Picture 1 (tube, rainbow, N blue to C red):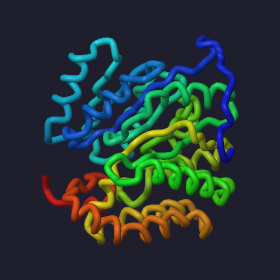
Picture 2: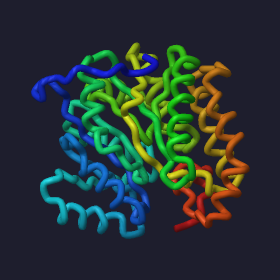
Picture 3: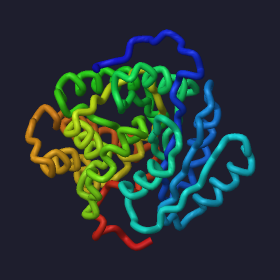
Picture 4: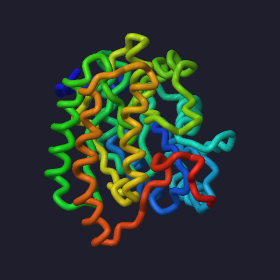
Length: 294
């Protein structure tokens, strides 16, 4: 599916419930904004689950403050201390979710006000079991143009992907049933080499599940990945290649995002340094064994 056509409104009783899962590691600075956007939805989420992964800052306290401020918002705080990393943290959140559909976003994601509603409508048809949507970079200039460009590029990616349609962890959803079907197959990636969202998408494809793309599932996100040092950024981008190679998939069309991300980095990295954005993302940049001690 390249895109989702507008759906006719369905009775609320027939629409799936949506849990929102937010993995978090040292996200004190942005988690409040993320939660406010998740709360202020045209249709409320079934639950909002923040999975804290050994944070050493005030992430937990910030989430607990939001729980107290919004007692009716069904905010849950889950602790995942068994392993450091995005994959086990995501898995803990997916396992804890009780909704029919699990929405997965990042701690710097700002959901559009109708995101939950659009996820419900998109998944009501049963046409696919997982989907992603476009993003708008809220800390970059020309946001509307960037949103349009991102949506256009992701639609092209879907056409190029063939069987292996991507999932994008900043803005994705998957049915609980599909998650349970592949849960024991997804790679633990303890070496921290892959994109966990692409790994999940590959395992869904290998099981014969269909992944969609829904333009109406829109979120805002930070472009803070561009603040990473060149070596860290390159390691992050190389995750595309390493993920597919780990599954024996060698198709140059699937590596199109690498060319785009590497092409935009030099100019935008310099621009953000001039604007004094210094918030490089904690997860995903460099191999774990070279991470500096906290």
